[in-house]
View 1 (cartoon, rainbow, N blue to C red):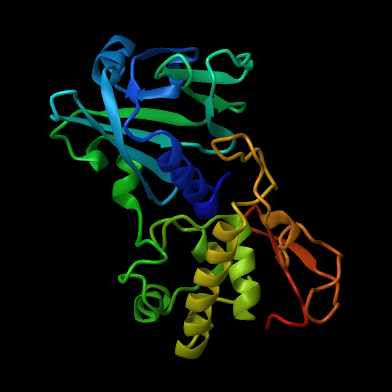
View 2: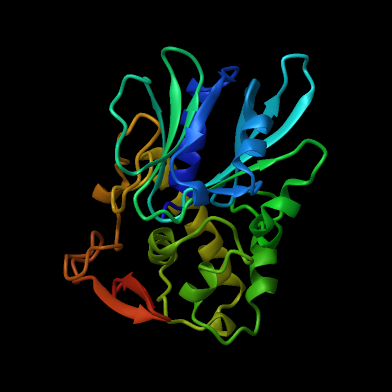
Length: 282
């Protein structure tokens, strides 16, 4: 599943190419890809003849404000890529793949396609005057953004204090911090020199401070590389990210640690893989 760096990469790409383009129409090729409203006719009534005014990211969600030709607010379009979703900025003449679920037509040269092989991704239209989180309810449950002022070492210490669960599991909890998934949880823990099995209750303020720095450093590196190549992730131009080639531990089982050469170990935690260096992480 795309994580914060991948979604942020898509968000930045969309802001580079789609802003001030007007949706002239489109088609839904898989109705369940549109989560709201239930009526596809109402969906197209809501988004047609609107201009995209600015994409932003909340956790792993993508949102864009819409505007009518007279300048009136037209609500928001929301997207969650889930496991295999892609938003691709293409020419309408480009052959339509069998996994294309929704097409937004802008003009004779441009359209935005939502491609999703596993079909778990979703799109919402939120009407004007309606709070986004009341329609896209998953947003209401999200914790702070990792680069926000609210996500401080003090917050992280209080949020994990006394918790009897492995720190790797805690990092995957979107109510603790938004946007982190399996890849960057592993990478953050390596940079923090903390084993994924360490219980939150055993993390003192010093190690929490390292973890806070490790989270931000891992996500920053992922964004700088344009995301990872480990899944079906593509940016808006259909290009893979580069982070996979520089990951420290994720998906590197039995390969030498980039710091100490010890073989990377892989274990299972709550049904998810966890990769770590037995020497560097304690």
